[in-house]
Image (cartoon, rainbow, N blue to C red):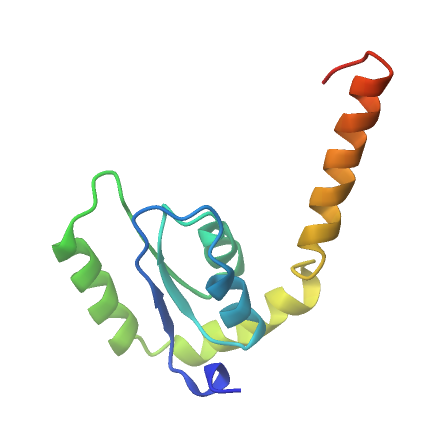
Length: 116
Protein backbone atom coordinates (compact mmCIF):
# COMPACT_ATOMS: atom_id res chain seq x y z
CA UNK A 1 0.00 0.00 0.00
CA UNK A 2 2.74 2.50 0.94
CA UNK A 3 4.95 1.44 -1.94
CA UNK A 4 2.55 2.74 -4.55
CA UNK A 5 2.96 6.23 -3.09
CA UNK A 6 6.73 6.25 -3.61
CA UNK A 7 8.38 8.31 -6.34
CA UNK A 8 10.96 5.56 -6.89
CA UNK A 9 12.75 2.74 -5.08
CA UNK A 10 16.51 2.74 -4.47
CA UNK A 11 18.06 -0.76 -4.22
CA UNK A 12 21.80 -0.04 -3.75
CA UNK A 13 22.84 -3.62 -2.93
CA UNK A 14 26.50 -4.54 -3.21
CA UNK A 15 25.61 -8.25 -3.24
CA UNK A 16 22.09 -9.53 -3.69
CA UNK A 17 20.89 -12.76 -5.28
CA UNK A 18 17.40 -11.55 -6.15
CA UNK A 19 16.00 -8.30 -4.82
CA UNK A 20 12.30 -8.93 -4.37
CA UNK A 21 11.80 -5.21 -3.68
CA UNK A 22 12.54 -4.61 -7.37
CA UNK A 23 9.76 -6.90 -8.55
CA UNK A 24 7.36 -5.55 -5.93
CA UNK A 25 8.16 -2.00 -7.06
CA UNK A 26 7.54 -2.74 -10.72
CA UNK A 27 4.22 -4.40 -9.91
CA UNK A 28 3.25 -1.27 -7.94
CA UNK A 29 4.26 0.93 -10.88
CA UNK A 30 7.22 2.46 -9.06
CA UNK A 31 10.44 3.18 -10.99
CA UNK A 32 13.61 1.56 -9.63
CA UNK A 33 17.24 2.58 -9.27
CA UNK A 34 19.22 -0.59 -8.56
CA UNK A 35 22.78 -1.78 -8.72
CA UNK A 36 23.68 -4.31 -11.39
CA UNK A 37 24.74 -6.65 -8.55
CA UNK A 38 21.09 -7.28 -7.78
CA UNK A 39 19.75 -10.41 -9.45
CA UNK A 40 16.44 -8.84 -10.47
CA UNK A 41 18.07 -5.68 -11.86
CA UNK A 42 17.51 -7.28 -15.27
CA UNK A 43 13.80 -6.57 -14.81
CA UNK A 44 14.54 -2.86 -14.47
CA UNK A 45 16.53 -2.93 -17.70
CA UNK A 46 13.94 -5.02 -19.57
CA UNK A 47 11.04 -2.89 -18.41
CA UNK A 48 12.68 0.44 -19.07
CA UNK A 49 11.30 1.53 -15.71
CA UNK A 50 14.36 2.98 -14.04
CA UNK A 51 18.13 2.99 -14.06
CA UNK A 52 20.94 0.54 -13.27
CA UNK A 53 24.03 1.53 -11.28
CA UNK A 54 27.24 -0.15 -12.52
CA UNK A 55 29.14 -2.07 -9.85
CA UNK A 56 32.34 -3.08 -11.59
CA UNK A 57 33.69 -1.22 -9.70
CA UNK A 58 31.08 0.58 -7.65
CA UNK A 59 31.61 4.33 -7.49
CA UNK A 60 29.56 6.50 -5.16
CA UNK A 61 29.90 9.44 -7.54
CA UNK A 62 28.32 7.39 -10.33
CA UNK A 63 25.40 6.42 -8.11
CA UNK A 64 24.94 10.04 -7.05
CA UNK A 65 24.91 11.19 -10.67
CA UNK A 66 22.38 8.54 -11.74
CA UNK A 67 20.23 9.28 -8.68
CA UNK A 68 20.21 12.99 -9.55
CA UNK A 69 19.27 12.11 -13.13
CA UNK A 70 16.41 9.95 -11.87
CA UNK A 71 15.16 12.67 -9.53
CA UNK A 72 15.14 15.31 -12.26
CA UNK A 73 14.00 13.10 -15.16
CA UNK A 74 10.81 14.26 -16.84
CA UNK A 75 10.26 10.65 -17.94
CA UNK A 76 9.39 9.30 -14.46
CA UNK A 77 5.68 9.13 -15.33
CA UNK A 78 6.58 7.12 -18.43
CA UNK A 79 8.72 4.79 -16.29
CA UNK A 80 5.69 4.26 -14.04
CA UNK A 81 3.58 3.27 -17.04
CA UNK A 82 6.34 1.00 -18.33
CA UNK A 83 6.67 -0.68 -14.91
CA UNK A 84 2.95 -1.49 -14.81
CA UNK A 85 2.95 -2.66 -18.43
CA UNK A 86 5.97 -4.89 -17.82
CA UNK A 87 4.39 -6.39 -14.69
CA UNK A 88 1.18 -7.04 -16.64
CA UNK A 89 2.97 -8.83 -19.49
CA UNK A 90 5.78 -10.65 -17.64
CA UNK A 91 5.42 -13.64 -15.34
CA UNK A 92 6.79 -12.18 -12.12
CA UNK A 93 4.41 -14.09 -9.90
CA UNK A 94 5.26 -17.78 -10.32
CA UNK A 95 8.94 -17.68 -9.43
CA UNK A 96 8.66 -20.35 -6.73
CA UNK A 97 6.71 -22.71 -9.01
CA UNK A 98 9.31 -22.32 -11.78
CA UNK A 99 12.14 -23.10 -9.36
CA UNK A 100 10.31 -26.14 -7.98
CA UNK A 101 9.71 -27.43 -11.52
CA UNK A 102 13.43 -27.06 -12.33
CA UNK A 103 14.48 -28.87 -9.15
CA UNK A 104 12.01 -31.70 -9.79
CA UNK A 105 13.19 -32.04 -13.40
CA UNK A 106 16.82 -32.24 -12.27
CA UNK A 107 15.89 -34.78 -9.60
CA UNK A 108 14.06 -36.93 -12.16
CA UNK A 109 17.06 -36.86 -14.51
CA UNK A 110 19.41 -37.91 -11.70
CA UNK A 111 17.03 -40.68 -10.66
CA UNK A 112 17.08 -42.17 -14.14
CA UNK A 113 20.85 -41.76 -14.41
CA UNK A 114 20.75 -38.88 -16.88
CA UNK A 115 22.32 -36.11 -14.83
CA UNK A 116 22.10 -32.66 -16.33
